Length: 257
Image 1 (cartoon, rainbow, N blue to C red):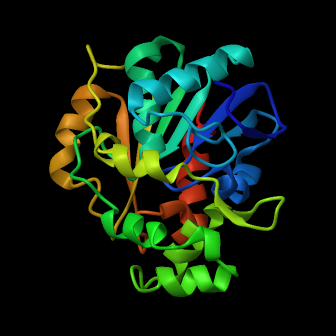
Image 2: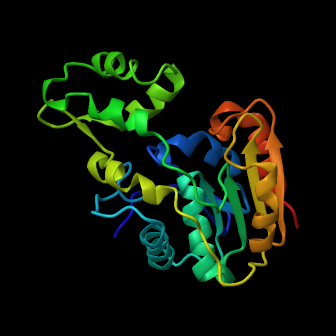
């Protein structure tokens, strides 16, 4: 599978960034421009069934990690830094479980390796309620979605998936039927055969409950060199809610010797 990507030119070390569920590479453009420098070139990757990447009848971590492996080999990227938010964080952990000896550093944003219950059911109901065939405007879509999600920030994030086709009709970039069906798999646990020993940074939002204090012992058992940074004033979308503090933590980690 040939994944869509954006490339921010810089130095010789590749940094790959993977978005979360409902997201795309577009969500990370601002951050990526603050990472790319004489040391790092940044690749923003759309995962399968998201953004401009192909749709496929499966959304699970072995498949998404396999896609990423294919991307790394296709572009001949050596010892990359992997960064993933939420679902993307689980994808890069799954990649590390299989090909950890090829990773330079790992950054996981507001997700742990543990299993999570099904999330986002109400959001999926809202997206499904938007009648694409009869939709007249993005505002109409937002009005419908507002009955399911009160946050304008979240609605704007979700509606980035909506676009106008060549015939003037609206369509989803997101493979909504597969995402709905496989959402239970998005919460799957990530397991490793043995502890993975490379520098790893976990970043969580102080207002998020995705990584709890009680989760840390299990994370360190998998990633013995991991450290945890908690960003005050941030929820699950840490990089969007507190970008300056997020970049301070991320760049500090990336620019260590």
